[in-house]
Length: 97
Image (cartoon, rainbow, N blue to C red; front, side, top):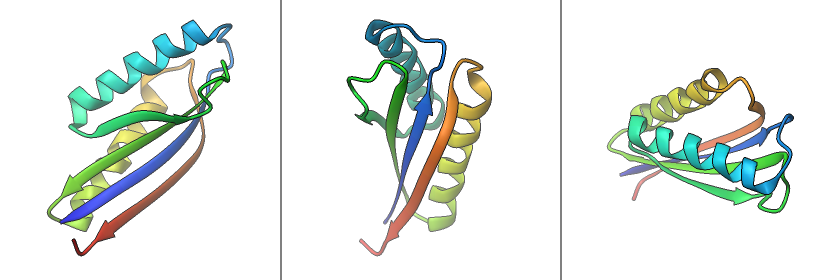
């Protein structure tokens, strides 16, 4: 069993409130879950209305597949919303469970 984990730091420059941020992040997280079958949660920057950090996890039978899924999720985030800027990505695959 292999677990791919990813932390994505986002900026939402045009956002003006926590309510607006939560709407953007909730919508994005639900679309990612539905499209890729991964776990998604906001893991940091909860009180910042223009910043968000998402944690994304994928369980797979192969390291290659886990990496491909996470790469596709990151590419989807970058192209799906013009109002969200990806600032940083940390990705790791843990194998040998």
